Length: 511
Image 1 (cartoon, rainbow, N blue to C red):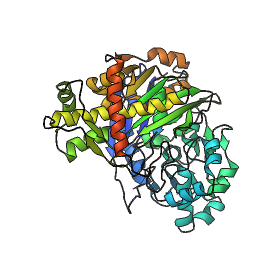
Image 2 (image 1 turned 45 degrees about the horizontal axis):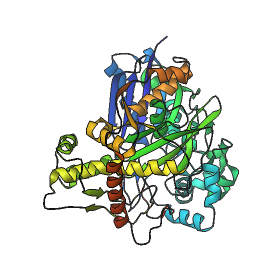
Image 3 (image 1 turned 90 degrees about the vertical axis):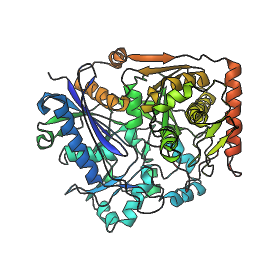
């Protein structure tokens, strides 16, 4: 039996594919960027056809790069940018319009109306989510109301809706499979995370015909078979997870209280809450972490808008460095008592502040301040923002002793030490930081019988390095107080602690 697995990692700016061997080591890779469309202010679209084409090309290149043929693959796992919404013709498989990306804000006014009408409590209770144009429901409603004949055709059963995983699955199986998994369903704002069913009341609220919706399966399940014409052999599709849930799965966060933080363009922190849905009082999201054998495991999710994007601004906007990797050496030259604070509220502040009108600011500059101090302050802002999320999680009554990290910024050893210092917890980095694709491969391996249990996956998780806090509580309190003062100065005059985001303005982190 073949033990190679193809993981499709379809993201916001590129489509990637990785081939993993039996030890979950990457042996082949392919990646292609695709076009971002911004037709109006606040609108973000993708051409779903281009996503399909770049995904297929990446898969073929990954197989070639691995030096294997498709018939040596045991199966396929899929992970994807979440919430992005596609509407297509069931007969032809062709999208009716560009996909509306999770970042898109065109439905903000409608979401404001729903909130003003008092619907948010019901929506949050059922879905774990806040009413916001971030999620798929209002995007799908917009497509039905603005694409010619879409609503009448949907009501006639001629159209299909899906997030990116569902669209790719439809294409891979030549229209034989119209399915999603519980993690992606939980991001649509139409799925009741308690009953694990599409919610009839929410379908009515958003005016969505039920005939559009895919079947919801476990994260490890038989999703159908990829047609041989695509990759050279018919292959079972055995696992699907939304990207942040896939990263948590790849990090083996299987026990209640375990958490991971992915440091990409933005940052997503997911903490496993087991069989319990924790309704956040600090505007965190409750979501499905994964579902196996019909049993959902839940998570709390918090988001940082600017992580790697801050360093991109330091590099490309201010041109203080030529490469993000230079930041580590500069930070090492900077003293531990840096009193310069960068609050990267370039597009507002996320949880727990939720201030869309806040804007970036730099505090504490003196004549001694130079490039290394500003660069180090940018790195430290990631630590402080993570502390804000962890404080919010701890305020929900959840304990967090260890944080597993991944993403590009997790390779910065200096940053990871400071993260441990600021959080006062252990930070662990795995040997493989490709956690998102790894999660897709691992959940597929579980379904295919290549691994027998979550415990076996956990045994295979290998730690590259870990960091414990080296600074004392006085240092930590002094620097956190300085950060909190900087944030208070940055918040807009009308902001309120833990207030709801203004849907028309509130940005979302990079998924």
